[in-house]
Length: 274
Image (cartoon, rainbow, N blue to C red):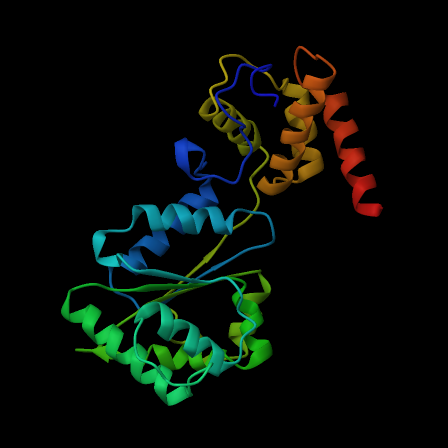
């Protein structure tokens, strides 16, 4: 809607890893390096934790795009509040389709055998599945963390047959601390943090350039306002920036200034209160 007015190729603040939108902040760059090392070194499990809105999902998508061909199979668990039996059935269906248990939800033994068979076959084909568990701090509620640990017992020549990536809120670290038998099996832990104040202008510029901006649309004062209001959280910056571009277009503004950012922030706060 507003892209033509601002002479952009596309919207700059979408949650998109394509087209160069991923901004490698110091925190994200360090986390990506650590997790890639764990994956490519054949480690069994790693953790990405951080507060809401800092870009965990974007980081995972970027990581998957960069992984070597050995990780040709990626399974994402986006609803972790499953019982152990349901979780195993879900993984069995996606890691190794086939095998009819004759019931809606197969037994734990049936799912486990199917998973083991599928992972062994992948290993023979020199492939290594990656299982990403989002909002992993919720696994504790259903007692499925022990099931996750047991998956790491599936090994060949001393190496796990699958790599697990647990992604969640910062509270995931406390959750894992209460599960020491799993925590000690985690090879890498990466903590994502909000952008530093000096990174916010670079983040906005990176996003705008990736969207095709040929001039400065956000004034320096507007970016200062973004930093102050969003506190370096990319998701908040994205929401404020997107709505500011829309409102600026509607008002035929020449640029996005600080009063416009503040007005948009007040509008979003009102919407949350309503």
